[in-house]
Length: 194
Ligand code: SAH
Image (tube, rainbow, N blue to C red; front, side, top):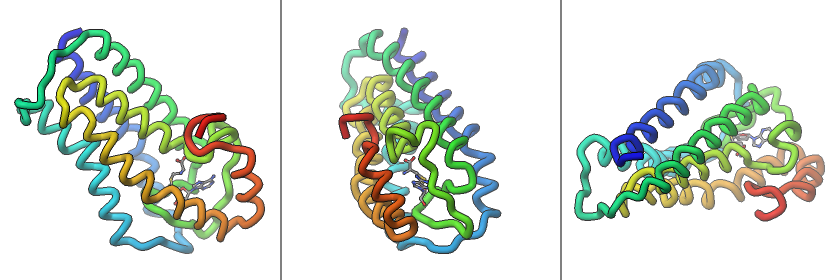
């Protein structure tokens, strides 16, 4: 594994992510919404997350900026990063399949929203966010740069911690005790741990 190959794998992972999401994005536009959370706040959180998971690492991959933050690449970190990215894409695909029409890029409730508690949703409530954490971790391993590497953990972490409580509140408001019971028997992102 060379730094160049690690960068190429990161890029391939991001392209894979877009390919998985594209059809869901198109369908989501046509699915009617009932309730939508604060749009300005949601857009800001998504911009922060996209900067960390997309823009900063892309600048680094293309132009090696910021060079001063580079450190020596170790092949094992590239291999682990590639495996983690593959796991992230697998989980990302599963979550989209299980959530189906109930998925939204922001916090929203659809006209005919069903609570999904099966498949990858049976043990964790936020497996799609687990997939994003894995992407961010893979990025930190694949890119040997102290800024571009961890940027995803910081960017997505900001979105995650400022959104997850509100999302659960919205789900409780929509599904009441059904969601409370679901919360009681599941973890947020890591089965049995958190
Ligand atoms: N937090 C989930 C879903 C992310 S998509 C995950 O990480 O897998 C965000 C949208 O999914 C929100 O607008 C919310 O309405 C919806 N949602 C979240 N959990 C859900 C569930 N268990 N069933 C159905 N919809 C859900």
